[in-house]
Image 1 (cartoon, protein in one colour):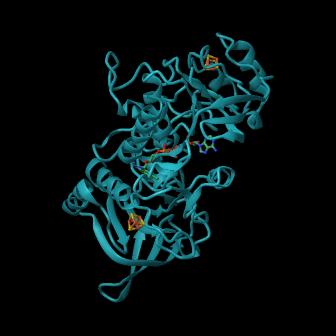
Image 2 (cartoon, protein in one colour):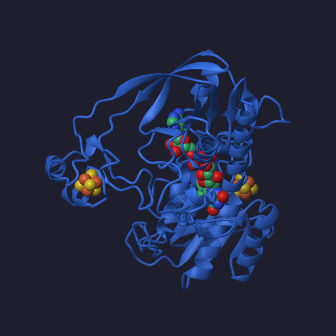
Image 3 (cartoon, rainbow, N blue to C red):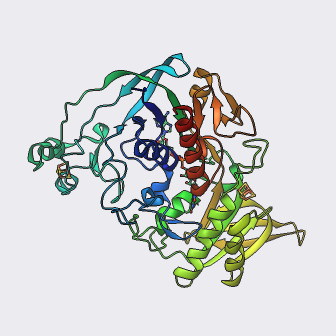
Amino acid sequence: MSNPVLVIGAGVAGMTAAIELADSGVKTVLVEELSTTGGNALDLYKAFPTDDCFYCFEGNRWRPGIRKCFYRSALIDQPNIDLKMNSRVEEISGNPGNFGIVLAIGPQYIDPMKCTLCGLCLEKSKSFSLVSVQCQPQAVIYNPDSRDEGTQIAAKECPTQAINLDAQASKETITVSDIIIATGFHEMKPSAIDEYGYGTHPNIITQLELAKLLDPNGPSGGVLLRPSDGDPARRVMMIQCVGSRDENYYPYCSKICCIFALKHANILTRERENVGVSVVYMDIRTYDRYERYYRETRESGVEYIRGRVSRVTPQEDGSLSIVVYDSLLNTYLRFSADLFVLSSALEPSAGSGHIIETLRLKSASGFIGPLSADDPVVVGNHVFACGTALGPAEVPESVTQARAVVSKILQSRK
Ligand SMILES: Cc1cc2nc3c(=O)[nH]c(=O)nc-3n(C[C@H](O)[C@H](O)[C@H](O)COP(=O)(O)OP(=O)(O)OC[C@H]3O[C@@H](n4cnc5c(N)ncnc54)[C@H](O)[C@@H]3O)c2cc1C
Ligand code: SF4
Ligand code: SF4
């Protein structure tokens, strides 16, 4: 029997690759460093291009017998997938087609097969939390650093005995035929860019943080409130190209930040009452079908200002005074806003550098580089990458790349 395939990272790309390989009869080991799968897609609320909710992102593929909104999971219910949560690849040795892998498996404090999400532990102690109502595996997570007096009580009273506070880390060695890198991206935290003031005032946030504020399951129940004082936020200013197209940070265009900014501007002006949005930009890049967001936001009254923000000053009433250089009018303008939202660069995930070094792969501005431009998902001999591990991409593109990898592996096994 052939060796299994290793997939590193259980975001949309890694999950798609693992599920489709497994459905084709290939054993797959899916390694995820966090306690829940989904990666960045867990936090996006609504998704372009269709504006569907993102909770059922796993349902980007339809399976007979399972509704689009999943109450069963293609990932958890698939016996060919060995899902390793809280885990990392520690060592890679051997040869292409026959890699030796040492996995560092984190302590498995909660048994997802036993947890019924009854919520008792969440009431007893802050050391337990629920990442998302749609999380997979369907289980709470435990953070030992937040341990308090309620922790032991919760473990004792858990009705299904799903909690093991003494769980220990372990190691496992496996042999795999192919490696798929799906380690994704991070949204840059732009604290170093002084003029935008990120980190100095709670009403200066990133687009990913705005997505949380818009989410009905988020901290404000989807009502747009100023984080500083909980007052309604009526005026929102967005700034594009934060850390992208900037030689001091990332020289590349992050490709999708115009689209997600305009998606949010559309939600704010069409689905919330009395919210005004201004977008400060250098260029608006809503390629292909995403041009509709530009048209729709124009129609719904979003104000576009070509220029750069030069200063943000918090005011006593909790608002922000923002000075913008308007490059079309060649003048400085002053605005008042309740929220200043930064469209931050998509940067390579933290472990990319280590993987590139260990497997001697090419780097493309810190993302995984393809061996040849003709075949973007092939990054080494029996080594593939898909999704945002290769660079900024939307979900449809990430899924298409994952399927391209699956097709290559299946062909090589014929
Ligand atoms: C604000 C914002 C809004 C967006 N809105 C949309 C939208 O509406 N529609 C759309 O199509 N796209 C949208 N996107 C893009 C979307 O988030 C990505 O296309 C998608 O999440 C990419 O999935 P991925 O699997 O490649 O990466 P990720 O989601 O980053 O997943 C990578 C996974 O790998 C894990 N991982 C990383 N390193 C390791 C390691 N060393 N070992 C083990 N595991 C590891 C991570 O924990 C994570 O779970 C948006 C992005 C942002 C920032
Ligand atoms: S008490 Fe037990 S079953 Fe209930 S949510 Fe917590 S871990 Fe899950
Ligand atoms: S997608 Fe738009 S905001 Fe993002 S870097 Fe490119 S031009 Fe700037």
